Every structure is written in C-alpha cells, then in structure tokens.
Amino acid sequence: MISGSPIPVVVPAGRMARNAQPVLSLPCGLELRPWRLDEAGVLVSAGQDPAIHQWNLLRVETLDDARMRIERMHERWQAELGAVWAIAPPGGAPVGLTGLSDIDLKGGSAEIGYWILPPARGGGVVVEATRRVSRWALSDLGLHRLRLCHSVANPASCRVADKAGYSLEGTMRSALLHADGWHDQHLHALVQGDI
Image (cartoon, rainbow, N blue to C red):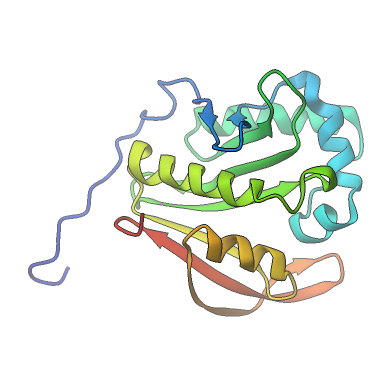
C-alpha cells in the first residue's frame, strides 16, 4: 500500500445474506425488486429477443430453465455473490433486468449488467436503473469499485455507461464470446467518490 493512502474498508460478510434484498425506487416511477418465480415467462421472452440474446448471452428456453435461473438469483443473494433485480412498474410485470455479479465483499467490487425489453427501450430506464443500483452498491452496500463491460459493437451500452457516470478505462481485446464470435470489450468503472 502506498504511504498515506486510506486503509481499504472491507464490507463484512453477512451484510447481504442477513437482510432481504431491497426494493429500490426509480425517478421514472418504476421500481427495482427481486424476481418472482411466477415471472419466468418474462425471462423466456427476453431470451428470445435478438438484442438481449446477442449482448447478454441469456440462454433461457423453457419455463423450467427460467424458474431455475430465478432460484439461482435468490441463492446468489444469500451467498453474497450477486444481486439481480426486475425492473418493473409497482405491482406489474418486469420490463427489464439489472444487477450485480461477481460481488467481492472483501475486495469491494462488482460488475453491473442489464437488459430491457423492446417496449421499454429508448426512454432512459436502463440509465436510471444503472444509476440506482450503482448508488446502492457504493453507498448502502459499501463497495468501492463497480465495473461495466460491453462489446465495442454495442454502442447503446456505451451510452448507458456514459450517462450513468461510468468512466471509460479502456478496451479489452477479444474478451467475451458472443453468439457471433469473440468481441473486444469496453471497460467502464465507477468508484467511491464518483457519485
């Protein structure tokens, strides 16, 4: 550690698992809430959307697959490895997904991801959801650094990252396998003090 630099703060284990996953409000009137098993059909529909399929590698073909994925979302919260929310109107069906993966409480980091169904695209919902989850992760959970990665061929995600306050740090060559082959990825980051 460099002399004079602050001592890193470690988020204590159990901080997530001992609490229910919060419901987070968005300025647009939507909310972020945990997925329910009865919403498996939304995941199946999302998996059939060409853009979601291309950029998010969502491989959910049956209701059973989707239910297992939703159960894994809840298991990953309890294991403190992930936090996934449905983007939905209060009391309504999800229009998208956002969440954190690769949560490292000891290291203070995570990766954010998202997708949105076609009817909800273009209205800034993903930017609002990304900002809200980021604020929760840095302020409430106490993480230090969030990363957002996307294919360089996906300019919509680059715009989301920029509008949500993530700084572009560089390009990772041939970093992620998509349906059409290996893609270079942009790496964006948000750290404590950025928001």
